[in-house]
Length: 303
Ligand SMILES: Nc1ncnc2c1ncn2[C@@H]1O[C@H](COP(=O)(O)OP(=O)(O)OP(=O)(O)O)[C@@H](O)[C@H]1O
Image (cartoon, rainbow, N blue to C red; front, side, top):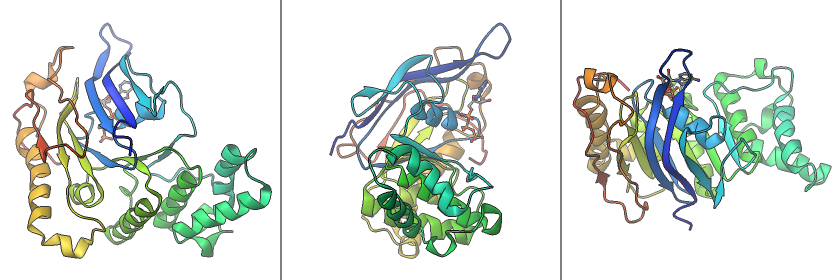
């Protein structure tokens, strides 16, 4: 296993706001992600989670630093990084099958025959239990089913990294739980490297190998990284009362509510220097929690 599969080094970004001073969203973000690892990004609204994901996706260019995936610099979007958004983003005029076919044809037109591609599309829709609805249009299926199709489309591209921006955020609790379980099963089978944004602390602890907790912006950075050393496969019912699960969950809540609550006046006025970042270490060697020396005190606000 390559422990430095995906590396973010000194990543910072400023957005041009049309005024005199650009807006500094991120400052000195350093993170190393191992091949096959499941990493969640958590932090308050507006701290810069989507910006980190977009930089990895190649949709934004960092102002400083950069991203290396398997030894190659990320400079633009590519099929080696597929994104699952909160709102499925399926083509409404295409059937379930054709939505996945569109992505599969783009990636595998030259390397797979038509019959192989058909088999591959059906296989990926089967992975997310959608074989029964191949010929339905997005408008004819539920929100959870659309999200399943979005995940199938992403997996079918066989990306090196799966990027998920609050993939289950718009779903009811029961559907969300079912999809979380499916995702855990799929990741166990396929060994995908996943970076997922979530606001849901339980979801982060249940699914992740590590949780990256971000400080508030502007000039947001990584505040702490929590290693989730719960054995797999993980069973949500058993874990609900597991003291270690409860302890890990508490550590995330403490970071979000007690130490990085409402952005302070000091943070709001943060100069380009920003808070001190934490330097990541390999997930295997990582201690249960790494503290940033630059964390700010704050009030309380939900993530
Ligand atoms: N294109 C842009 N131009 C200017 N500012 C931007 C741009 N994109 C993001 N920002 C700002 O950067 C900061 C981080 O935004 P981002 O969307 O990454 O936060 P987030 O943590 O994903 O938020 P949420 O949890 O609410 O989705 C915010 O202050 C946002 O307003």
